[in-house]
Amino acid sequence: MKKRFNPIKDKSSEIIEFLMASPDMPDDEALRFKLRLSIEEAVENVVRYAYDGGIGWLEVGTSLDHDSLILTIELRDAGVPFNPLEKGDPDITLPAEEREIGGLGIFLCKKMMDSIQYRYEDGNNILTMTKKV
Image 1 (cartoon, rainbow, N blue to C red):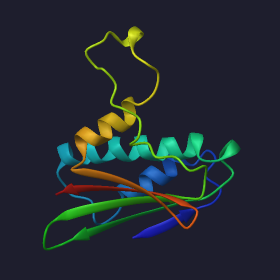
Image 2: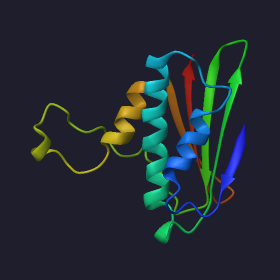
Image 3: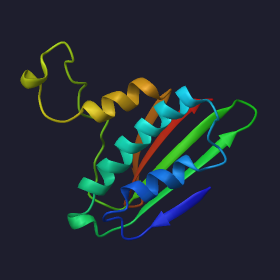
Image 4: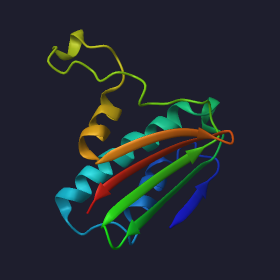
């Protein structure tokens, strides 16, 4: 299941709901919570930072390998090249006011998903997240 949103300005909720409504999504509520949080963080990063003013496109999709029960969520955009996985994990032992700004969302994604991969290909940022469902 795939869809391209263009432009993405003010469409975060619509994009997130599209992905969560995928027939590939599991019924388990605890698992859906983790998936939704990861999707929200990834989508918000693209909507806020990929394009100047949100005038650009985001293609999102899901697929489920029925043999391995691996759900794959992919986000593709042509915005500013940015690998969110390059930033180190935040030091969560520090009080919130002493931590560097940024990076907590992708850190949560890394903890909740089984894998997250980034690649830049043919002028596109491609973020792929997987989870055994």
